[in-house]
Length: 96
Image (cartoon, rainbow, N blue to C red):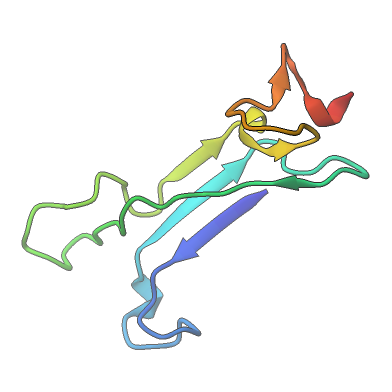
């Protein structure tokens, strides 16, 4: 699954300069499992600077339009309790 978060001026992204709005992208390795419920919370640390939009050095270490890969073991599901890893060995808990 691919996710793109755009930081537009207008909520519908049709405002002036929204065609070049900064964005961050995520690619989730395996987000869905048949008959199972999964979830994922993504935190965006900062809004990337768009080249030539500011004279100041970039305040955000995220590169505009860069893709962050989210491994399948970070996708929550099929296990109770608190954990940061939803895999046992090389299998996701939803694969059992």
